[in-house]
Image 1 (spheres, rainbow, N blue to C red):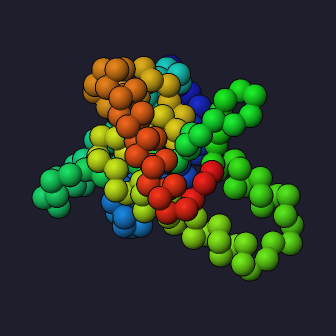
Image 2: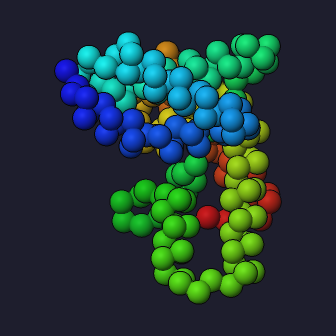
Length: 188
């Protein structure tokens, strides 16, 4: 059973990522805030008595369902989902995290030029545009695996599909993003 502090700490830890994920889906800041708030309320009200280790999967499923409900209410046919990371392997461990790379640039370049800031913003916008173009299920799997850092089993449970489907969606999303970004001249 999760204590009140564990639940509160968990909600604080996922707040920003959940907002970013929801915003990528709905492309409306106020709607994304509402979706995240509704998801947090549902988790606290209905699942606050669950063990702390189950909260992540439950929250991801609730967030997905709230986002789908938002689209259904708007009579939109396709649910939109997204995330960033793992375009290419680099380093000894084979992991590449775009966000860590870009945040590392901020730390290493204390006096960044306006041109560098603009170029980085353009690259990030290009990546976001390509993520938006992914099919809904690919975007959802991609976001959960690489943005939310869920493993394959957790992503499959949250999406309500098999682990093989998650792997296929992620593989196709990474391939499509890599190809689209290279075509735009963005090399990570």
